[in-house]
Picture: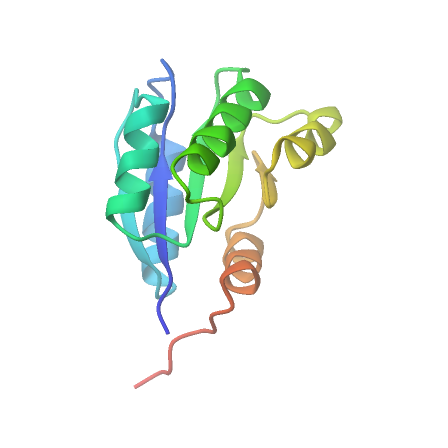
Length: 135
């Protein structure tokens, strides 16, 4: 089974190198990845997530507004009757904010510097998928 993941850059943050690296890493690990690009509105992220039938919305946030943006995405997913879509957050996340993000509804938090193999392992655990069979 292949899990679909939406990688999104909410708000005004225009730095997308990390999000692109994450999207490529997940794709190479066997996930189907939808990348929204930068400066996305919460409503658009939720609409795309529902339309694309994703299992996870991954938010890449470097702006410092990670707690508020995460809460808004989680609330908007609930409002769209899509609370079954998990939300994960990565980016410039101070250690002291990890529990705040979890309380806001984040299923996982990946601060800057998280090894990519840890990201893949945790995303597989979250989605209930395994590594693709090698050919």
